[in-house]
Length: 184
Ligand SMILES: [Zn+2]
Image (cartoon, rainbow, N blue to C red; front, side):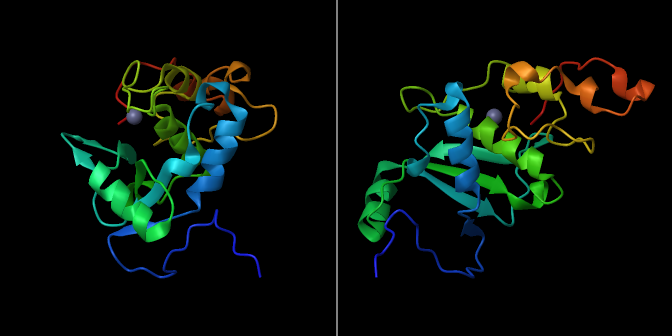
């Protein structure tokens, strides 16, 4: 029997605070394949982890996810333990994203992938979010109850997304222009 070495083996029912969750990987892979601005992101180098306890509170904002580099010491240790090389941890604040739609999770993975710069370092947003997400999905894409586009749907790309008002009901409230405001 062939062993698929590309699959990460994890304990199936780990009850701890940090839970490796490979379910995000195919989303990240599909996004990298689809969007040229993500083409240098090495999804193989990312460990996807749910933080099942923390609320991600920073000042008065709640983070939904974050990405960071794994310190060299732990990188080497993980490589020895798994035979795999991981440079980044993408961490999801499970309690904050539980009620998100699939489309919002996909947008969130896109958002975090953008934080990996071309040279591999973690980079910061152009504004408080990535400008294309802010203007095309709306400043509240992570918290809104309205639908947002599925970035992985065929035919959906940034150029074809014309702004959040298109996706709203035609209620006056929903037609206001996006304003600059913090996403997270
Ligand atoms: Zn961010």
